Amino acid sequence: MQTFIQLAALRQQIQTWQQQRQRIALVPTMGNLHAGHLSLIALARAQADRVVCSLYVNPTQFAGHEGFAQYPRTPDHDVAQLAAAGCHAVWLPDDATMYPLGLSQATTIHVQGIGDALEGEYRPGHFDGVCTAVARLFHQIQPDVAIFGEKDYQQLCVLRQMVTDLALPIAILSAPTIREPDGLAMSSRNQFLPPPLRIVARQIYTTLQFMRDAFAAKQPEAAIEQTAQHRLAAAGFVVDYVVIRTMNLHIPTPACGEPRIALIAAKLGETRLIDNVIMNR
Ligand code: AMP
Image (cartoon, rainbow, N blue to C red):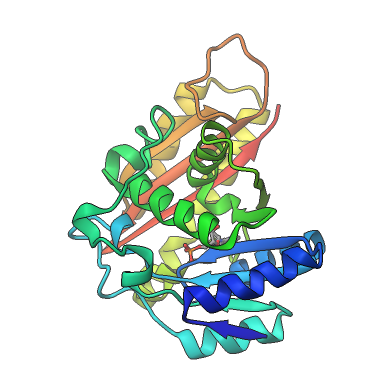
């Protein structure tokens, strides 16, 4: 596995692979890798000849109070895990490479509509930062395919819209959420939970399971949302949202009988957690 810190060297390697007609997959991450990230690498290996993983803690997707400085950075461990997982190249850009004109002058991408609700409402500017960084990675690496986790379902939808709208010749694939044995979705943020709250955190997934079962049992969606909200509040969460949406993240109309997705964002102590499950009836 090769490690790149210079864009010119990375581009040279990409060009060589392109000349050899090798299919290239990109897995963008912020590092501090866990089994969820490694599952994306495994999918990338199945989809492409060469896998590039980027490790970049992107400042523009953190709002002021969101702990950019505290975000866990473990590059040596990440690189070792990626090598063991069969990744071919690691891209470690610095801020000057990602934002050569500086953060305040950066050309910024805003995906309208789908990016404005839910996470967009509670984390203003977050998706602008995500899209701005991911679009740069796409231009730097020119992958044939890019892989994202369903754990960040709205991010996946926003990035699909960006790729469609900008006609980027990149296939976006998604991978299912990898969970801890008690059901908590793996996340770099979980390590911030003190042990008593870590036990409570599993209630996010049990609440999502309740929502899935209630939906399958044809209970009204508004009532399911309300009960779920109460369950989370009673367990000690400060809930940002607990909603049922169509797979395109629209508010469902009662008549439509398609699959749904239940999404939760809630704070436990200082740690904000998000998760979702797809539901059928
Ligand atoms: P992050 O490093 O948190 O920005 O995540 C990088 C990628 O890994 C994103 O596409 C996430 O959706 C994905 N990801 C994060 N956690 C998980 C998980 N538990 N299971 C599957 N994918 C995940």
